Image (tube, rainbow, N blue to C red; front, side, top):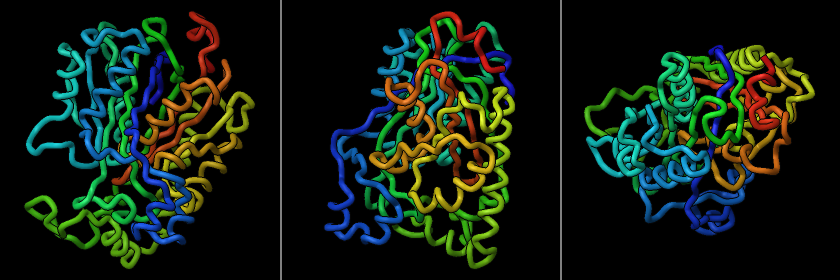
Length: 354
């Protein structure tokens, strides 16, 4: 997606105070030591007493306060999630909008699996580009992974799930406080990979109709048996590589541009990232890979947005530094964004890399 002009991003993340260390998980029998080493996490945030929409409200309030943006100015509120949001046949986005005070915003829920937060930012930018009168868009994500429906260590291969929420305000430069300048974003799809999360299962009429707990490993085993792991690796490499190259080109950056400080990875296990994400990423750019997920785990729909919140902090990017932020989600879609640390107030429109 080519941007008419750079946009401002203000990003926050909220995590519960409770943590489960990997050693605690090993001692409890939740994960064996070999798998824990392949995942590479040190601990996971665990939300025992707060629902995902409540977490999203906390992240949203922090983002709006940080940006200096009153909630009533929002034109759009997009909420992305992977797992249960606390109630059935109910709209979590409308709850978040109401609790946040975004009464003029249109609340929309996104079911894009683990790439939902990234797609939400793309849709927010699309709204602002299409309607010059539209107010800013707020993108929230929140997920909580609890038994009996989800085992944070065992439900899927290549990742362990952490609980938390993110909020990213998408706005025009100069309107509100800007943590990061968004120069470009690109999303590619590999819809032929949807079967990887379905396998040979039929489409059941009721939730959890295939078993008492969500088990992503079973359909993935079916996929590998039917098609081989190389089918996923090739399709993912093609999609990741195309998204990265398009995002860099639209930002006016070569893969070896010295302004490109980092290439930020999704928050998957280290083995999964090494096998699926790093090869196409390092082929497209020489920017040093940055892994920000060892203390959070995989955050459902919020990996990329949590990485934006980390980049918004004071320690990773200097003024003028750029970062490429990469993410993917089941289905599959892959998104790459190029952002930078603002230079000086009021100059970012002129100092865009495009």
